Length: 119
Image (cartoon, rainbow, N blue to C red):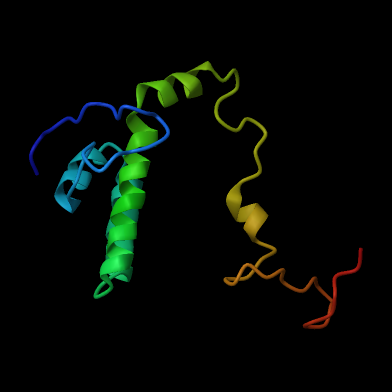
């Protein structure tokens, strides 16, 4: 991998086609400080094997991740938060524990499959 830096995108809210890392190799270099993001890129590429549209979406997601990790405006906004990005946030695994892989609410303990949750 070669060392390279890319200038920030013109907008912190959008990455244009001519901005930032363009290839998988560029993304590996650009996201190297965040190994979990590199691992997610690789996992996404593995899942996309043979599906060019899905591969393109995976690369697009990694490019947007790079913007979020590096754009000075976004970094300043995060730094200005008094208690960090989500001081009282509920971890995602807790939120999603009640849902299955199809984003359907899992039955509550003692509740029959297909029965509406009691409210």
